[in-house]
Length: 437
Image (cartoon, rainbow, N blue to C red; front, side, top):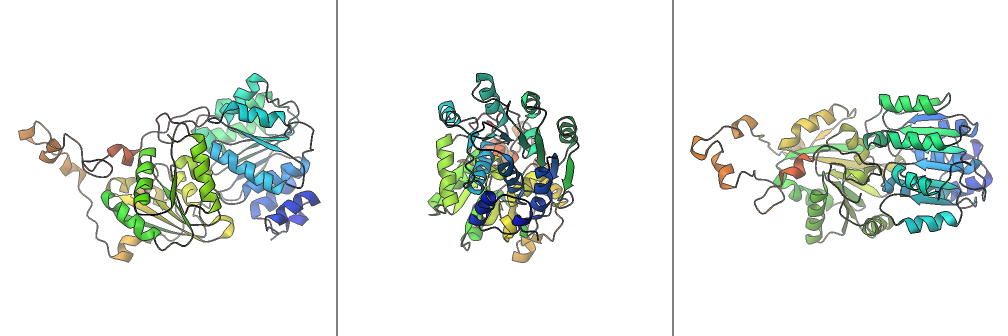
């Protein structure tokens, strides 16, 4: 592998890299850094955990001058990812004198204005809050020389394309721009054609959605049995674990259950204030909490190298969400394990995900000798004349089916989730409904 000192980086930047314990560049860093330093635009496709943050951050730190105004702009879809990027830049750039500010919805405008007034050279922002600052004049783009769009496909999913176009139209044409995305849908390619000049394309992971280095397994069980197996899998773990749930309601209940079982767990879910979310992430990153329970919104904003196990408590409703979830383990070349709990109603969704997995996948039902019996949905829909078209069991429960999450044992909305709803600044949870995400 190529060493960072061979990529043309300055001594001040190399000191920051050495402080973080790195010597050799990952493939995407080796490929991208020299191109960006040459002044050419880049389109990079890479799965999560591949080192792309350092690829664009190191290039930007090399080129930007201290005390010369805002010269670097990085846009990210969620506040968690924006904060993670800022943390990385501060670590790598601590010997450069370059200052960074993060602007995102959900935090008081005053805090961000104070940071901007002190003078910064790089701004990391979610699109909606960046537009708020542009309109009030607290951020100007006239001196911008470097722009990055990170997780561009997620920004597309969240409805940010118009906002991004508005922002890019305000930026100087003479700039170095890079776009990074785990997938390259047509609209992202169209965006790159419009705003990037003759970009060098690096599709390093176009055919690799396997989750290399991750021992992947699944278990088909009844929904009400998930708590039991969650404890069984988490107990032996010596490092940290992340449990991904489909909704904020599910997240809240799983975290509560873990607390009752005396586990040191924290949660991130939509109804929490920004202060409480940052507090939870701080505890997890520092190792003061062993388990993080989170929704998909956090799946691209968590970079904790000690995560040994990821449990998908619910099957994600999109194939790519699965790979972003499991990518929280096996960071920076380490090994990790991911286990997906598949309830009977989610078998169809799981089969769609399985088609994208290109490494051996362990069937824990066979390994553990667990028999499954998936009910025939047609039989459950057979009408009962005596109770006016409802089956006897449904009639006695007021029409609600049994399962997880209520006094009657069910909360159907938790398992189904719902459609993603777009927002300008990511302030809705992944599955719809107003929240302060």
